[in-house]
Image (cartoon, rainbow, N blue to C red; front, side, top):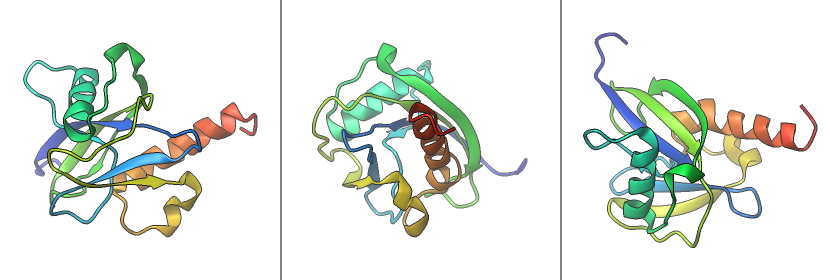
Length: 143
């Protein structure tokens, strides 16, 4: 891992009223992931998330509305032999997402169905979905 290139990203978790997670697939790729992306110079992770959400899906959010879910490291989904460092936030869903910029497709994931799908980025399956399921169970008093 020490000799692999590293990319740093922000990813956002937006849940609809049914508890489904918003996913995006970038043009020319096969794996779904959360919206987000790489920071611009001098941008905080939260500022990156707000900017990317507007660029990719036409959705508005404010930095103060984001809640840190966690920071995780692992393999990058669409860049082979690359290590990913991702800061992941919960973000309120403020409207209907519309694919823009490099986003080819949007989808909704029922968190309970994540293990059955083979088209999800490693960050999602290894870290984000388990964290969201744990959060949901705690909220429902089952943890």
